[in-house]
Image (cartoon, rainbow, N blue to C red; front, side):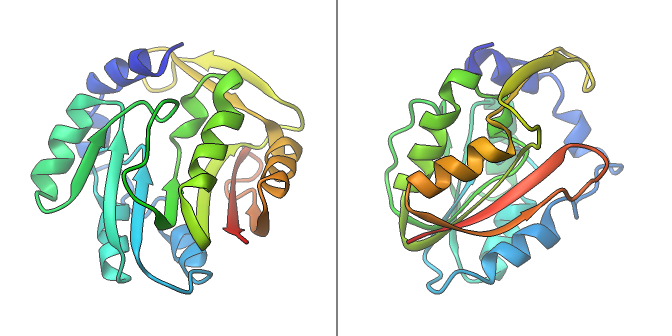
Length: 199
């Protein structure tokens, strides 16, 4: 599934994030942990930012200058209404050309939608977009091996892929990053996240 198709599907389900039932604390503790490793609080980027603005709020609270990026037009419309002062980019992360260098990048529950063949490209782009000493946090499917699948848990059928835990750890090492934290934060589910620093 191409990212543009994923974006169109997300356009139809923004209500799930606008609902009072959505847990706005999802991922906050993990982001606070990642931010502890950042020595210089410059620009920050929320990849797959969606519409809630919770990570944008946290970035601002912690002294970063945040930007957001998403493939869903509807998500970005809502995000801009919430944060008109923030720069948001309507882009496919697989082709995105960074306008700035960042000291902190988050890709929470987002890049697992990119095609499996693009995972290395996307992680490489994110690491390349970091300043020296910058920190990346991203969540992924904590499988043992690379793979992909589809499901309709959120309504429309969505595509997911992962390089697997070993694959992401190896790639980050090849890209000159130090692994700071790896956790299966919803065990026994395979939801995992990594924190890495660009050396």
